[in-house]
Image (cartoon, rainbow, N blue to C red; front, top):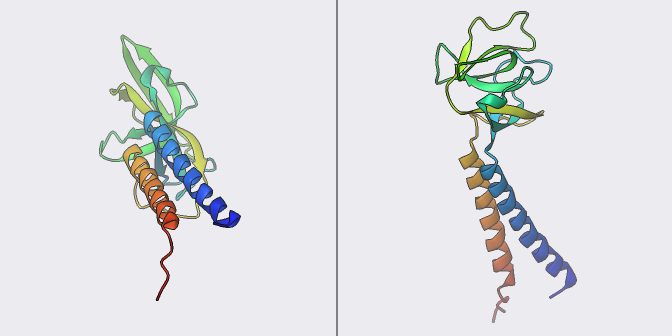
Length: 165
């Protein structure tokens, strides 16, 4: 076996291990990807960008955080806005949000009912577009699937070559 082929095989194995480690990390740390669908948070994020979010405890919400929350009018839809007001009274957390490019805060107050809320940590300026938000389970499945394919490829490359008679 040539050194070049051995190097390719080692690269495949290392890539597989990295994919498995990333999948485990994203699942354990409750990391998700979502696509920005409006322009209300420009210039921080533009429509089509991808945001990386992580679940935080509701009592860790601070003014200035960008959260992904359900719309009060339709809880099945989500929006991403910056927290401009946090009120914690009687074991209840209520927040007011505002889009960075909007002149005024949102008209509604949101009572955070769940114990965890997705907080945006990174914005990936995107030249590609996902058609819907990608949850932790999808990230995990994609990374594990990619790792499995790389492992199969590395194993296939180890099979002896058959000579044609």
